Image (cartoon, rainbow, N blue to C red):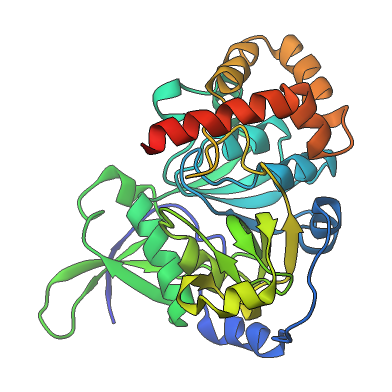
Length: 327
């Protein structure tokens, strides 16, 4: 198939489906107890230089607890999949954790404003960037989940985003029409926060999933963080609610309020005051370093961070606010 045009930026991950299949063929699908701590999961599955995908959408259902642990572990030279990434991206920029970036939406925290520190990091020249649209990144994951080397879209054709991407224009062998071919991507590891999981990794998610189901199937390793662990019987009696099955999962971390300060649909609202505190303190790099030392590097675990941010009182307020929003 002839390539008619192509973007100027590199493709960071090999889209060869046979190489991916060779990896997955050796991966255990045993139904075993996969519980571990955030620290153990990061140590085992997120080494320096690996390519990371993070679930959720915007500030909704983000695995904050594990991202904090990535920073405390001082991980560097990661690749990152920036698919509508808000506070998670802000955190990884704070730690200068990644050097390669597939980007659709970054730096902004939606209506809250732009992250000054994330902007500084992206303007530093330290990060190699390839641009995509949100839909293009979702199609890349879908292609990987299907076991093929590329997906096709039309929406990037004729845009500057296409020019700055790693996509290629091809001609349809059936109709002669032009499409953008986007390469499949198999992240080395993904982290997805869910409402419920059992010890084996069977997961329930309430609300939007966006591209998380494809991400779960594309990632070579998958860390699940869950608001609560449930018995396997609870999974079995409602089998249609299981959207991520155990055989995709490598680690299960019980992480109550693990999306804080983001939103967990039907459970707790985002802490807008604390998110705004991040944006304000980032304006002064010296003050931001003190902030990070207090809230990230100076604590031993995510529970200590929650206590610093108001503890149970604050969390109950956010639960009550989410119930009001839900009505």
